[in-house]
Length: 481
Image 1 (cartoon, helix red, strand yellow):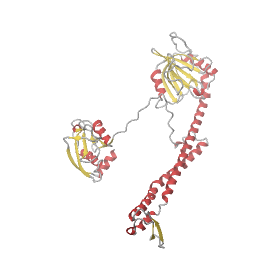
Image 2 (cartoon, one colour):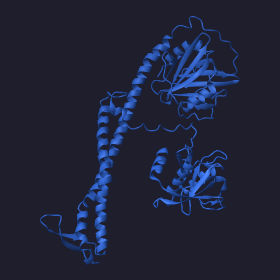
Image 3 (tube, rainbow, N blue to C red):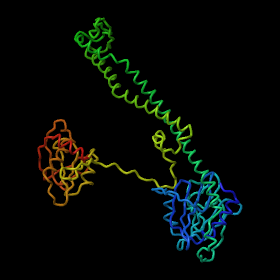
Image 4 (tube, one colour):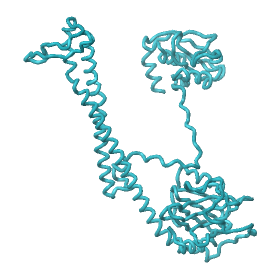
């Protein structure tokens, strides 16, 4: 963080060359850093405003900083309101590390305040009356309330000023800015890399514990069903004795024909069930074992494999040599970074609603929409479809509404009609039979009775088409979806 003397020195250096400059571009390459690109007759400048808790600073920037593809909300606000504004003057709050920029854009006046105040360091945009309009980071200085961190160094209206091109002396290098940039930028970069390494370590440790819990749970689940490993064999041995079994019997002794020695084994029975009921229980328990082999074992193997990899990642990160390294696989394979804390100034974005239909393409390239649920059927028919689109449905059975997108008064090609009818049959209760009747008409002939349940409609002027599901046609349609 800059000292009071540093703030005074860099402001003395910046004021003559920044005053009169127009803000041409604004970037926010990091969450706590803003860059103003200025243009004055005779020179272009870049001003760095950093609200870093340890390395906050203001100075003229000599190096280029890569831009962020999607600007954060503060940057978007600053671009909308401050781009094109002219820096009228700069000042420092007496005996404090707070820098003020007075900006004029047409008839509007804005104050850009950089508070280099340690953990509470921030950048604020104020109006001419000192009301907070925006802040770079969350702050106690609430939006819409007067700025109370420090009084404005200017009082009353200032006389209009004209700014002349920079002199040769002003076009020289900026030693104070260069010194601050050299010392603070390197320290901030190292601190940022170390913070990122510690964040990754914490994140990987958390994920390792999560994997360990998952492995423990899967192991316990598998041990429970592993006792049913031989129950399939027991069920086979019990089959020939089922007719003789009745309720109330607690066990039965049978010959184990799966063992060459033909020993006798005793199988426990549920006395509340008869022979078929006990037989069903044995095969049901064996089904749990086979299901575990199919599902639990792969999941357990995957969890163990991930645990080994993340333990290697953790060891590599704790060595301190892999931060920001592109040649080491574990770092590149780390879990996705957790979402940052929600910016209270960012407007809530509504989630995009799920598309209510599956979309396929016919052999001739026509779009075919197939509703997913009864409620979605209404959306497909009465929102997505136009009056002259073709509408289809399997006759006399629950199923999806199907729509073929057509131009006005356009006839549907024969193969497209077959494609759409195949989908209407497939996405209905006639799927298992593989054949059935499909009705079709223009969408404008479909009505929804008042108070009808979702998906219920009345149809007029319909035509019929008998359909057999052609697997090759169906496979082609699925590939187009």
